[in-house]
Image (cartoon, rainbow, N blue to C red; front, side, top):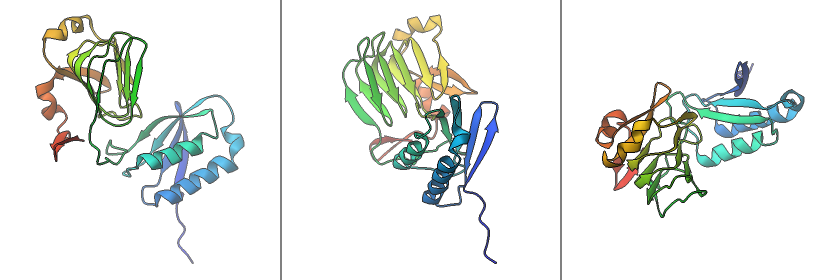
Length: 224
């Protein structure tokens, strides 16, 4: 008698929505195939109000292309909204070889700069300007607008700036409005914001290696 495989996709209801548990031991194409089957063949179960979806990868890491394939499967049900993609070790995505990407210019009021991966911006983010990235954001200039790092759920992302005076910071799904004392931080040197215990904290840049020891220089590139 052949071995019976456990399901590659388990779905559980929670008070916040739906939890999709993906079997880390199965090849990812097999996981996608079963996910597609369950989404297509029980379509009446997915009809209804908007529902937050949390995807748990276990100890698996996926590529951005694999993420795209998975999101396309969910896109057939507009009410299923992927809120987070999480791994047990905190890093759901495989790191590519490109390292940090460089852009230069000023993000002015009303402008939105969106980026996939880690971003190094040589310039200012003016009040009313917005920078969003799926990775970390480093601004060699003044950050006076809104910055959202870890936009797809990466809670290890950071936001750093030569002058950190934002109107609002977001890391993963956590939002922080800056305290009044940040208004005077322009002369206090480079600072960075990071998540700790579900809240956004700010520290001096020279403490980065202690707080985020997984961030380091490799082959002249900033890698995480």
